[in-house]
Length: 168
Image (cartoon, rainbow, N blue to C red; front, side, top):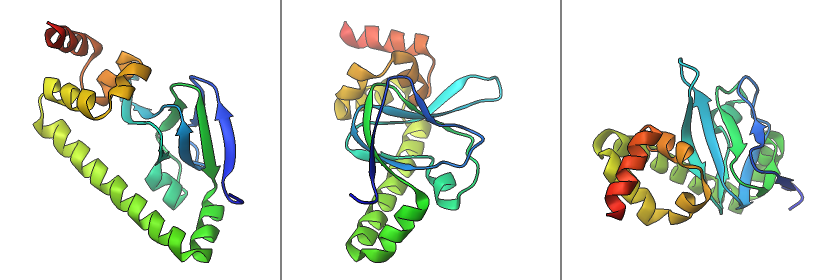
């Protein structure tokens, strides 16, 4: 715990901004966070929605300490633990157990990203929604529909139509 700082952020707070090097890796104790960027039309595209427990940041930019094109926003009030890159590196050097844990977290993140890319390419919009409903119903109860629609690769009108068909 000497390396992780507890923080509490209100709903709708952007905690990491595009154009800056991500300052922290966050562990979500409670609340929902989204990672998003803007497309060339200026529209927000939500790429990740995380719920507790789990780690989130703009991983590749945090790891390489390069400016990010992504924003990290608290969708709800969030209780988090955060760690800087230098403290994370020190902790990993000092603890073989945490180093092993970090490798597992990284492997899970890679696996998640590969699965998500495959699902966006192969599943139709309705199936993507049903899968989210089945695997993470808490997201549907706590995250605004426009963010969920973006995360699922559709517009809000399509999501609304799909939801109405499912309820029938």
